[in-house]
Each structure stands twice: as structure tokens, then as C-alpha cells.
Length: 250
Image (tube, rainbow, N blue to C red; front, side, top):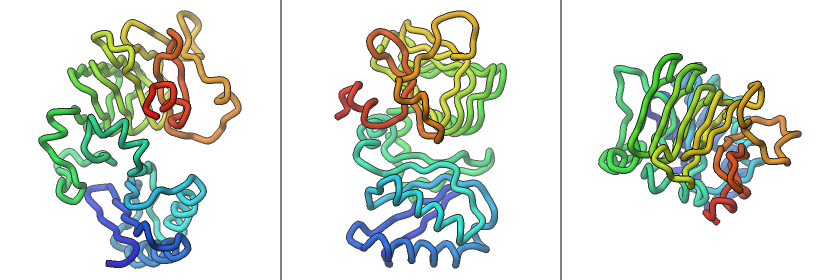
């Protein structure tokens, strides 16, 4: 096995990197691997998990550029298999789940490294978009592999992870857990609730608006975002050190 190993299932890719190899060699091997697999991968939008090596943002962007320059796939979602992420997800899903599956297909659980029994016990997984009029409720934390469209709603007694855009309504900690949170790749909800706290879109006319942490105001790049209770109010923040610190994950 070389310094770079690719695994795929459905529409997802697992990119395994040798932690001992130099980054320059890894980038070269990634280019070779994706160039060789170009015809097999085709032109598609895929999610990707990166394993084996902790990357900074600059290194991750260089890898994504290398993939883009050597094949026709669009990497729409990246999940770093790193300790900080594991602290949040580990008690809900044994390994990260990456992409929506076709309705008539099932993920290769052995390839993904997912223990189905752990998933069933610790988190619910919903595959596909939630469309206007759909209203789902869960007793455990839930991972939505898709978007929550305007007019759709999801509630959970635990946390809510949306591996897509949250543009409808979401209620985490529905039985009163104020430590619950809502995480999404794009967090632009019509309404969010955590325990008995409620906030609405900043564009709405009435009601308590979703507050953004001050340093986010000038931010233009899309990053994973999270809503949680801070000082008695629901705030919207970039997933990162501030959120982890506020919630005592670090």
C-alpha cells in the first residue's frame, strides 16, 4: 500500500493518507491516484472523509485543488477524521458518514468502518433531503444526509447534524437539554430552537433573531456552522475553537 489510498462507496470517497510521509509526496500521489481513476470516477458531486493525517486549512485546500485539477469530480463536503471532530461525533456515530445514498442502494458499511449496531443505538440517520411539508422527530441525535428545505422541520431530543443546507426549521434538545446544538454545512434556518429557547432568521421581521458571533460578520467563505446557547441566547458561530471552548469540548 502506498502513501495514499482511495476507498469509495456510493457517492463517497475515503482518502487515507500516510501520517509519516511528506506532504509534497502525498500531493503528488493524490494527483496520480485521481488522474488514474478519472474515467472510473466520472463527473459527479461527492463527499470525502480524510483519514490518517491532520491537515491545516491550507493543506486541505491544496489537496482539493489537486483533485479538481486531475479529475472531473466535485468534492462537495469534507469531513476531517480528527480528534476535535471525534469529540463531538464519537458519542453519536462511530465513524463520520459522508454522503446521500440512492434510494435503492446501501452503503458498504465495512468499507466506511461503520458499526451499524452503534449507529442504531446512538444516533438516527436520515438519508435524503427534507422537503417543504415534511416534519420529522427523533428521540436521539440525528444526522441528516441532505438538505432541510424551507417549510420542512426536524426535531431531536439530542443534537442535529445536517450534512447539507439547513433552510427550514430545527429544534434540538426538544425535551429541555440546553447543551444541545445544531450543526450544518450551511446554517440559514427559518427558525431554530434549542430546549425552550427560540430564534428566527435575521431577515425575519418579528421575534428573537438568530445572533451571530461578532467576528463572523465580515466573513465571506462558507464554513461549517453551528447554533447553540450562549449566555441565555441562541447564537450562530463557525464550527471551530470558539464553539468547542464555549461548550467545554476543549
